[in-house]
Amino acid sequence: MNTVEALPAPVVEGDRWPMLEPTPTGPASRIAAAATAKVVRAATRRLGISVSEDGRPADIVLNRPEEFYARLGRHGLIGLGEAYMTGAWDAPELGETLTVLCRDLEGLLPAWARRLHGVYERRRGHSDVNTPENAREHIGHHYDLSNEFFALFLDPTMSYSAGLFSSLPSAEDFADAQHRKIDRILDEAGVGEGSRVLEIGTGWGELALRAAARGARVTSVTLSVEQAALARRRIAAAGLEDLVNVDLRDYRAVDGTYDAVVSVEMIEAVGERFWPVYFEKIDEVLAPGGTAVIQAITMPHDQLMTTRTTETWITKYIFPGGILPSTEAITAVTEEHTGLRMRSRLSFGPHYAETLRRWDTALRDRAEEVRGLGFDETFLRMWHFYLEYSRAGFAAGYIDVQQLTFTRDAS
Image (tube, rainbow, N blue to C red; front, side, top):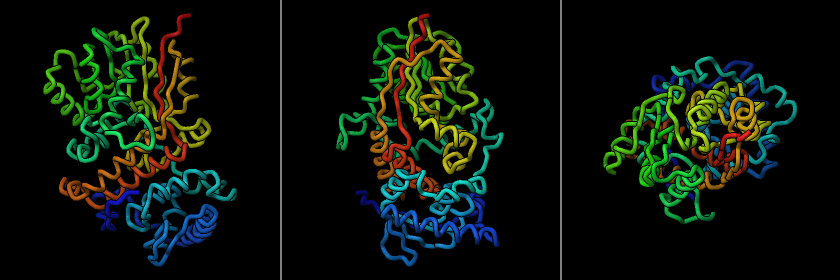
């Protein structure tokens, strides 16, 4: 149970949030809102979720019911997130409520409503494609918010990916879980004294630091200016500049030969169109007998097929250009385009749910410091929704995180 204070309702500043459209109005929107209200009431009753429209305690409290139903009716799940950002609704335990909903996503809407999904679903535009030019902008949108912001809620290793806990539930030190995750990747990749390691996606440098501590020589590439700057400072402070080189470079521009290639939760930012390019590059630079280990957030293949061209709340506000692969898609791409073959995989989705719970608790606990960095209440509510929405996906088993180990086909 989280005990930090609920976030206050924001005053949405239009010039700071141009993507956050006004509440839909007009006859069509009113009809959609009325139909949505009936669907929501039926679904929440069936799921045992209490809904209040008069401020009484409930699992979902509708502060402005008309806006809530109008946004949800017009823009589906994007509208659900936007209505939370504006304060149109609240939930005392947001993650738990969203988890219940995630466990029955297919059954939330009646068949007639599912057939009308095209009314509110939006297609991804060309700017969402991760060309080299777009990719730098997309990465900067999220990771260059400021190192000070991320330091407020990440653990001391500055790891922004799933920890691997010794057991769940866990009171384990967060840094220990992050080191266990990193060390398993390095062990799987066979990283040791003298290994030549390529890291695609630097983060803030913790994996590179631990690889160098083993005596490996590391080339780490990133498109985030902020991350590169802090990673270099951390590497210098550890006295490992001779073993680690952090390059501000697109993975597509990498050259050289490496005994191990590692990449932690970066494939989600690659984009479906460039999955073959990503794995072809790994195949190209991997030395004979080398190993690649990818940590990836994955989704079921049928969900990938039905949502791959659709804009979501996450792609609109958090990770433009992002898309989660399925294990099947990764296997198909590597087998068709490369000599890489998946040799093993570790699934640990529940560990991500715990990771996200800790991040969200820490961020809300330090909300005043977030405000001090210049971020407003809408931003805080957006991040709370993002972290708890993601946690719900892992807790419900709707999405997963896996470490995937590849070697080159010997045939």
